[in-house]
Image (cartoon, helix red, strand yellow):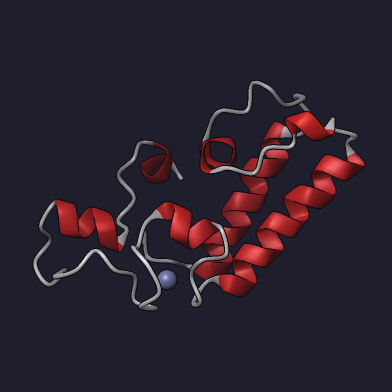
Length: 110
Ligand SMILES: [Zn+2]
């Protein structure tokens, strides 16, 4: 999680940028897009789709259950991985847990 938050997740795109031997393309192994965090977390990756749906559904349910006002219900990469100051304190650690469950389930080798 810390590597992801610091921008050093070993995604295909990052490994390509820092020239890891054998990483000849920034594309994801699924072949449907650039292998970055946005691709992995937000339903773009065919290899992580089930885990991604579960994570996003659990966060959506959390927003509803905790009565988070709709204008605060952001579902973007900065909210999932860091900036949650706009959200109630009760919600923040639960989003971190949802992301951690995604990472444990999907095991995207980051
Ligand atoms: Zn993919």
